[in-house]
Length: 69
Image 1 (tube, rainbow, N blue to C red):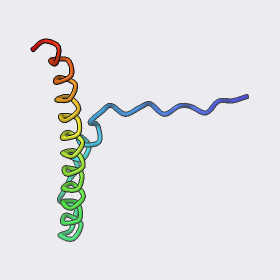
Image 2: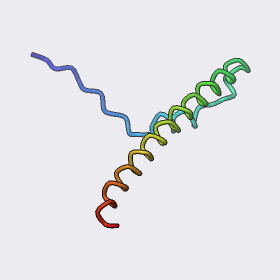
Image 3: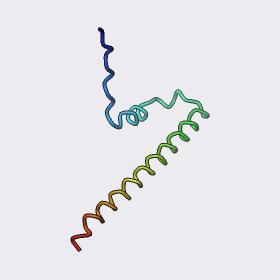
């Protein structure tokens, strides 16, 4: 039985690095505006995840500080 080759996993953050290296001269105005909309949506998604993680961290910190006060 032949096994298919496994694709290597991408490094975290590799996609954003690739985006930053892309030649924007190739894009038209509409494409650039669409790109900005997508990037702003990704920023919002990332900010929401960061906020959730901060709330979780604060809850954990409060739990472990509870017995020390």
